[in-house]
Length: 126
View (cartoon, rainbow, N blue to C red):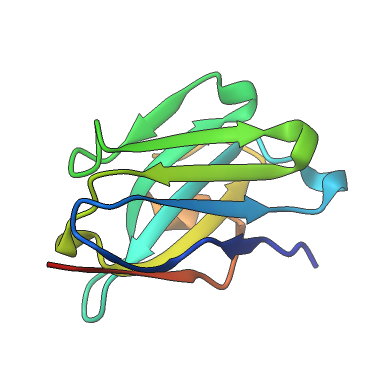
């Protein structure tokens, strides 16, 4: 079973930054054509935050985070990152890492991903 492991969450003040990491088994790095970050706040649906294709050939962001968040992927370290700057209370959620061997569906559709991590909590206070 493939395991994606997120880390880097925490509690910060509005305006501060966090960097999330998602590590995958080395043998799967080049199997994952697409990797993404999703988030889910209490009582809300899981939503796509950002996505990157292999070798960072394409990146996509939700409008609510564009210009503040940056997704990147270091295949040599089997790790994907989400640099989150200028955090807002509305960014508070559980953040999940997801991966897929293909790009057959919209990047923000959770059903497009076969593999998920267990999540890391991000809490932003005003």
